[in-house]
Image (cartoon, rainbow, N blue to C red; front, side, top):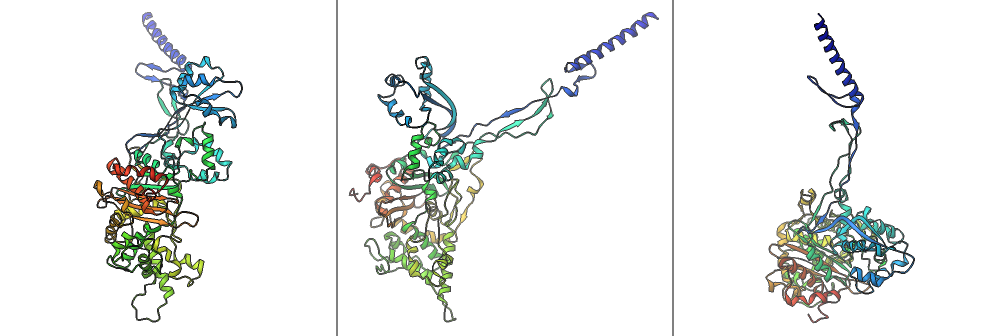
Length: 609
């Protein structure tokens, strides 16, 4: 019996020992692996954790996948505000030209302290290695938005979070609110996609770091998305160089997709100026400049389009049956002046070639004053005029005019197309006649279009009646453009009537046409386009041109507006031709290279072509 009792006592001792061990380990908050039972975890061993993830802002690429903007380190040299500095030795150390330090820092000393100079990574590393030799200097490294290009500032723009120095300066100036609301570009428009979203996860972990639910609500992390633009930065740089001394805009796009290839608002500036801490002097100059370089002209400045609008009037008149392609009108100077002599326009093609003002005066007059055959007499001509102008307005607006196109910029203007109700409010219901609104026939008067709309009208003609909303971003990450940029928008004009415009647009670039100087037949490119000269009561007229190439299967549409440049055929048209040739061929013919400098500060008439 004794051995059996001993066995029972031994077994009981083992059980008590195991129970004590489990109790001890539980008290020490450790898991226990019990044979036949598995790992035992007491409920209070779970520990709350918080894992946070901050996204890096997405990059911006051009159509060739070159980086235009990215988030990365920046470097500052903080200057002492007391004592003398051996600037000669500093220039030599950093490899700067003589007097470079004095030049870069002279205006900084008129501003608030501290005084800061922007450094490159190489300059920063040189100073860091020689830090002991310059105890008065302070080096600072911080993370900010960097721009790897000096072009396309109105396109790239800025995010408000990255532009606080600029916004602070803008608040103190009369134009501050205007610029703050309208200058954000793609960085502002796509800000939520570029910046991604902060993520925080709250798991309950055991001592083996295994999750057991959450102890708080999680926020989902999304990485910042990259933007891939349709912008051709080589073409953009070339166009900005041509417009360097000018005021105006150039918009070039692919009519088959609506992708914007080139977008110049002149005068322009370096995009890094807005966000760099050490460039406050340059920002002040931009804000105070009378030329308003911060104004995004092609999106926010709506102007009369001039004779370019004759294309729209002709298309609508063809659709409404007011004319045919064979209709001819006499060049009657008593109706309206024609700015140059030309043969009689026997049909629409010749009228477009010569840009005959009296012809298009009579086209719109026939449309507005038309009275259909009727047995009911007398006809209320006032009511009929309202009805005809309303039909004109409805068809013109189907070109995407008098409305926001929806381009991917934070601000744009809708332009303006007058309606019968507009004239009724201003002059009374029957107080206006065609004789008081005839300037609409040549794209003057109350009509206003933006540069984006000018280019889009040409895309509609190139596509024979439809368009895609112009846009800069061809892909967000790998998902392509936003869905609305893939949708076709159709006008109320049949495609056959757009086809009837093409011969006249091509003829305008041939000898005797208003844009013959911009002919590219010598390099095998057929261009279709229309010149315009916008009347200006406060100085020289403004020059316009809009067209596309090749005329048969267009690959590029270009709209040009140059302030105070005179006749469109001598400045705007050659400018557009250079852009087309540069894009389609990658280079410009030698005989047209000389235009590049002439267009910066004059017109080709002054240079004898």
